[in-house]
Image (cartoon, rainbow, N blue to C red; front, side, top):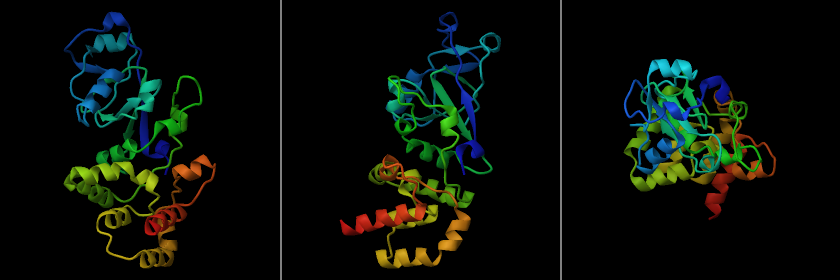
Length: 247
């Protein structure tokens, strides 16, 4: 499914200098710098902001209130290239250099969606201009694997229980690039690896129809995207496994 079908998108708000500088208030107003500092401090959830605004100011500047549980990130400039993500914990505003995406909780858990966004390289979706930027219309078309909630929770539990080295490895090969047909397969094969390559591929071949019905999403690998090719999740997964086997 596409992000446009599973998520709500939020735009930032222009923040005139005359309304900046309040260190307390009803709504925190997060800027790109706040998100960067948050990530550099090792946090996932946004904490304090350097600026706060009251409802009357929000009305004057025609601000967009961002709900809790929204993944926010820089959408323009050099900050976009850093791929830093954070999650809001309360209603807030973000400046107009920031975009927010909130998953539909009936389809995606917050933690699963955050991990997907962590591995989404905005450089691949940004406009080819001197000043990099990404559009809502572009991200709405990005596909995301939507397994059942139980499988998503299993993935999240693995993340919480994993040690730092495993967590780093997981982020490096994030599921939205790994090309897996099943999230449960990803978890089992990534950390338990209790079957041979031959048996693994044979099992997947035998269950091809069921997998296609359950997860009809096509995934891209970095290599195929560079060549302008669209490859099925099955081909990408098998290619990755064969490469690992040959190593």
